[in-house]
Image (cartoon, rainbow, N blue to C red; front, side, top):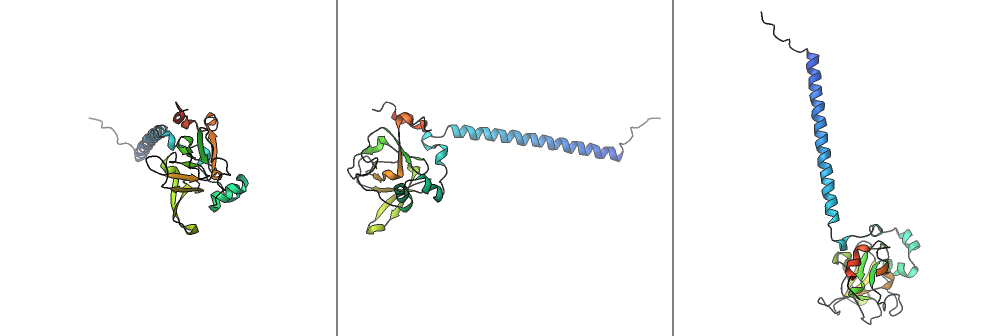
Amino acid sequence: MINLPKRPAPRSRFLVVICVMVLMGLIGAQMFLNRAGAQKQEEKKVQTTTDPLSSVPPAATTKPTDKELKQKLTPEQYYVTQKCGTEPPFNNAYWNNHTPGIYVDVVTGEALFTSLDKFDSWSGWPSFTKPIAKEKVLEKSDRTLGMDRTEVRGAKSDAHLGHVFDDGPGPNGLRYCVNSAALRFIPVEKLKEEGYGQFLPLFEGKK
């Protein structure tokens, strides 16, 4: 007489099914974690290969509150950047500055212009042929004072910087006329110290 194997008890079959389900769940979780880790590594790789001119120091990512701005800025800086004011010509910090370096947004620290694109317009305000990168500034129609002008504002801070005109030198013929009160100047020798070292290559070989 042949003895056939006994069928497993219902309870044993239930435990087997549970074990299989748990094992499948663990395998699925491991696959998800591996995929997430690979995606994070890929994102990190993309970030490190981004154009250095588009990267900004941490301070340039957040606009302070109005209360913080009143504490941080001088009355003239607040008036110019937040109330669309205009400082006196020939009586401001940078109109005649010829030192190599970059000009950053006084509100957020966003790098906006370089001395390499600055020229003497004799308008009484700092003038540039172009921003350090087009996306750093926003242009907006300005019809105040009975004139049709193009206002320039900081892309991240939304601070009033000045205006752009079509009477400048260079291939595009533009003149970005900017208030000194909207800017903070950082000389080349302090770029690395203040977190703007990625802009140093712009000045290599320049006198």
